[in-house]
Length: 258
Length: 331
Image 1 (cartoon, rainbow over the protein chains, first blue to last red):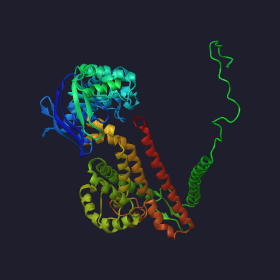
Image 2: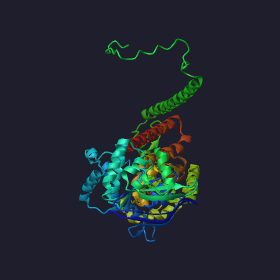
Image 3: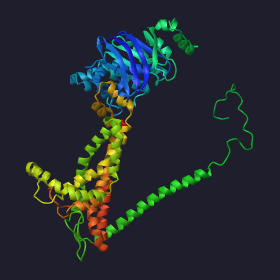
């Protein structure tokens, strides 16, 4: 199910403002890649270019290539809607559809795609909720609204919703920043399980989290306020946190830890 | 120390009681500003209630006079003759005409208004969206007599063709049968009212749609929803109660519209199953047409019909609130 991502020469704009400049990197399948860096360095923007969500923002546009296995997501014949069905996303704030029940939330993506058998729907929803470690908490109230769950449960519901459509890649934009430590731990454990099946890219402000969950870590930085964000380096997480090859990375990491 | 509590020898001694004298937090609990504002706002609230009660009492008192002097059934009679020694009048025709024309207006206007609102909030490029919104708001400011004139001079002559066509294909239903004549019918009134309530329904709906949370739209987008699916999954459910409120505002205007209806409709005290044939009447139109020539009792009779309109409006609003409240859990 999981595919690899190769980005080359990717530049993203908001109107005339260049948000990220000339980023190239590879993301291995069935692994967790973490993006770290100071606020405003463009890591979320970069994440959103990977499923063509960036261009939804008014004025948002992208130059460069994103290859999913061998297919360029920004190729001329590519439908952004289809891209987003292949590359799922989990957001910073849990955002289950407030008017839908827990069951319908998980089924929402499947119903959009229309590629399921009615009889399978229940099984897929159950499997997805189990996959998101939420099944035992909600199995007796699948008909209740998703907004009635706690923040951590809502975020896992959103993960269940995202994995229900069996995407190739799962993007997570600071998925734990609105959660308490216990819920954060639950989501981190879940990420560890999900990487067996999906390629996962996670943006995080929490460096311990990057160290705990990721296999590879990319450090983003910007030269000054108003300047576009750049990829400083990407390497094995262990190396980034012990012996990074760029001084800026070490400064950033040790500054935060020290 | 609390005598019931078990003694705890290890507990630290209580701090000494605060010294007597002005403490740093002492002072008058109510400040003059608070008092004045409280008085003002409470006064406004009470004034509103008093005015409402006075209107209701007035309407009810005069209505009772009228209904007790009615020599026919006030609710079922198909006539309005409130003069002479044996006045006979009833609201059946007016209630039918009012409700039917207002419902017709809703059926036509609400889908169109929701469509325009969605176009402005989610489809139109920004350069087009704001002027369009402005024009819609402007339409709401056109006086109803202007709509009435336009309806009588333009709409009425131009609808006869449509009505003949409807009669040819749907005449068998009875509702759409049409014998030639000026199109001064309830259906025409419905169309005119639809145009009149379109701006208010559109502009309230647009405001609601614009407030649909971005995070839910993005949730739908990230699942691979098309623009329409995003609207269906996140914008419409969010805007549902707002659209209902907007429709109620529109319905309120349609139910009470006077001049435009009076200008277009050719009134009669008959209930016809055909909505295309001229005839019928509405509460407001009937009051406007008869009030200037009515004697005191005739005025009472018209006031009684006004009270019924008031009650209908109240019921409609109550029903709308019920609909909104029923799905509270999901909002």
